[in-house]
Image 1 (cartoon, rainbow, N blue to C red):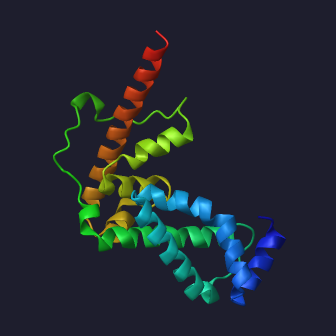
Image 2 (image 1 turned 180 degrees about the horizontal axis):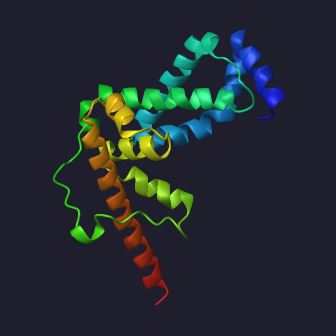
Length: 188
């Protein structure tokens, strides 16, 4: 959205114009669903989180301060991330992470190699991570949070955040390796 258009939309949102909210939803719901689905897997839960996010946006639009092009998208994305994390916290069964996942020694320091893999395939692999690993991975990689910040957000120990990130990366590295091997086998 162009800066002038975004600023006009923000002004209309501040006036609580119903058509402006519909325009916001139409313009950004697709990317917000994508952000939410990095954290929440179940489609109904994604829809619930997105709905709660828009309610939160509506309630707090008066505190939004326009800071130039992209600031609206950054603000609504942050709300969706926060609402996704709130959903995880309110559903303790989603936060549980299996600590008995064994990482073979030869993969302990392996980083995922995303070359030659579509973004869609990578996102599918990330969505297959256990909930706790996925939350830590997303916060660290996409939201650029430190392990200390992640620990505070998720209510876990800082070393658990680091451990879960390491395990998430190892699982992704293994999934990518398997994916690439299966692709290579198709051409033999």
